[in-house]
Length: 96
Image 1 (cartoon, rainbow, N blue to C red):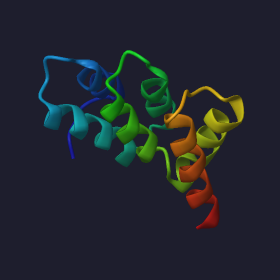
Image 2: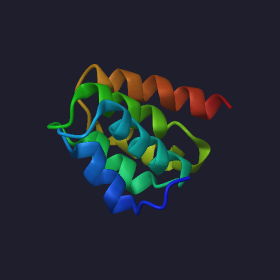
Image 3: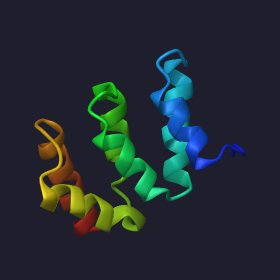
């Protein structure tokens, strides 16, 4: 596990000059640390490439981040196709 802070992970995930692998790892680190609020901040960033927003959305599909994912769905905070994906992921979490 890395010793990066959540803020460093967010900065890496948003850094367009970082490698794709580094950006994915930063998002994974946030997931492993149950940093639901930080993951939510990333998935809301429309300037973030859709592939990273999609990965971040999937990272929220955990029991620990259930309420955060529920909030995104209930609020209608995401545009299609992320909104549909969020709804499907929420159903998956709730079925577990």
